[in-house]
Image (cartoon, rainbow, N blue to C red; front, side):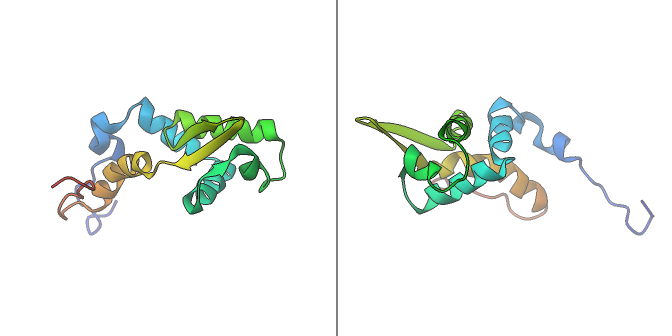
Length: 119
């Protein structure tokens, strides 16, 4: 780094410190796959059954089930059984919680971002 570009750069992992945990890791693992990101986009529009979700993809239902399991384990979706039908719903709060430390890192010098519902 040249003198002109020199400034105190705090490494992201050091800044996040205690924010790094298995919960956050599972969220980013879930988001790393394009199929899972597409499932989240679908669920953003409305709650869907596993079958309705699978209909949007050219992969087997067990593959979609695996993706849904990863999303559920990460806390990004909720699943509720309605008789024989499994309905999935997006949980944005978990994604928001994972993103706040990153947004604060990139907004250094600005006021800390506030969580919804907190003052």
